[in-house]
Amino acid sequence: MKIKEIIDTLKIKTDIPVEILDKDVSISTDTRTIQKGDFYLPLKGTSFDGEKFIEQALEKGAIGAFYIDDNNLPNKKAVFIKVPDTLTTYLQLANYRRNKLNPTVVAVTGSSGKTTTKELVASVAGVKYNTFKTPLNHNNEIGFCQTIFEMPDNTVVLVLEMGMRGLGEIELLSKYAEPDISIICNVGTAHIGRLGSRENIAKAKCEIVKYQKGKYFIAHDDELIRKTVKFDGEKIYYSIRDVNILQSEVNYSQFEYRGNIYELNAGGKYNIENALSAINTGLKLGMKVNEIQEGLKKYKPIEKRWEAVNVNGFEIINDSYNANPESMRAFVDTIFDLYDNYAIILGDMGELGVNEIQYHKDLGQYINNHKKLNSNSLIITIGELSENISKEIVNCKKIHFKDIEQAVDYVKQNITKDTRIFLKASRSMKFERIIESL
Image 1 (cartoon, rainbow, N blue to C red):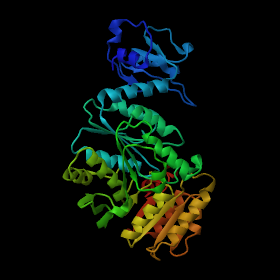
Image 2: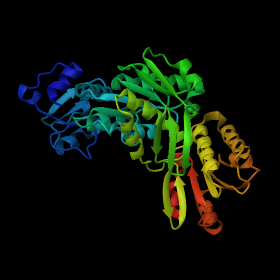
Image 3: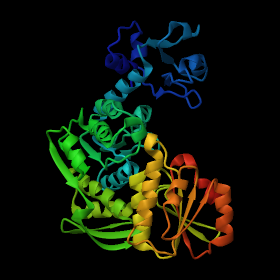
Image 4: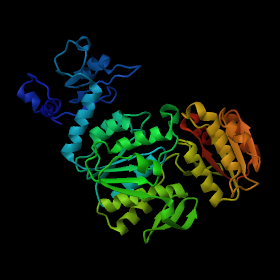
C-alpha cells in the first residue's frame, strides 16, 4: 500500500513530500515482528498502549507511524500521521484493501461450528478459486484487519470468520468486510451470559447482513433466524432434515443432499449440517457439484475439533476447542449413534451467565434420558460446574473429578486401551493437558 493511498483513504491533509507519498509500505502493529520499511500502527487496549513503542518501531526500521497523542512522538525524523483512533484507522485501511483486491467475501458466524464451517467453505471454494481464510483465533476486529493484510493479491474468494461477545461487534465487522455471501451456522446459548437471551444472540448474529454487498444469505433453518434477519436478497436455509445419511463413522460421513451424494472426512450430524452451508456457498460461487464434492472430501478437521489422536495406545477424539449446551448435545448424540465402547470426558462450559448451573444440569438430564445411552457408558466430568452434569446421570456409569490430574490417574488405572475416549469442554478448561498427561 502506498502512503498516498493511506492519506487518501483516511482523508487526511498532509505536507508529506511527493517522493515519500509514492513509497510502498506494509502496515505492522507488532514491534516484535516489524520489518524495515514497514509503517507502524500502534493499537491500544486496557492493559497496553502501542504508542509507547513508536520509537522502538523506528529503531527496527519502520519509516513512520500513526499516532493519537503528540506526547508519544519521539524526537526522530520519520513520517508521522495523526489519527483520531488507531483501531478505526486499521479498519478503514483494511476496508480499502478489501475493495481494491475485491475478492468475493464469504462471512461466517454462529454460536458454534463457525470455525468448522469456515474451513469447509474454504476447502470447497479452494478447488476452483484462489481462496484465503481467517487464520485461527483471528475472528475479532483486529484479526479481521490482519487477515485482510495477509491476504494474497490474487485472492478470488476470501472466507472470514466473525466472532462476537456482544451486540454491535458483528455489525462493525460487516461494515468493513462488506460481505458478498453471509452464513449463520446456528443461534445457540454461547455468550448468553453477556447477551441475556437467544433472541439477543440472534439479533447480534444477524448483524452480519447489515452492510452486505451481495445477495445471498445462507443459514441454519431456525425460526429465530428467519424471524430476526432483515435482508432483501435471496435467503437459503438448510437443515439435517434435508439430508439422507448413507454412512456414518467416526471420521467419515456419506450423505445425499438434493439428489447428490457427498463424502466428508468427519463424523457427526452437526458436521454434515455445517457441510450443507459449504455446499450452498459453492453453488452460489458458480461451482459444479463434482467440484463441491471434491472440496468436501479434501476437508480435514482442525486441531481440537473432532481431532483423532493416538496417545500411548489410547484412541482419543479431542473436541475441546470450545463448548456450549448445543455443541455438547451434538457431541454426545454423535457418540451414542456411532459407538458402543467409550468413555466421555466432559468439562465446564463457560460464559453461560447466571443460569450456568441449570445449563449443566440440563445437559446431564439430556444425557441421562438419551434413548441411545448405553448402561455401560462411562461419563467422566471434570471441574466445578460439570459436577452438575454428573449429578443428573443415573442410567450409566459416571464419576466426577475436581481437576484434570485426578481424572488422568483414573483413566490410566481403570480404562482399557480398547475404549475410545472423547474429550469436550470449553477452552478455558485446557483439556489438551489430558492428552499431554497421558
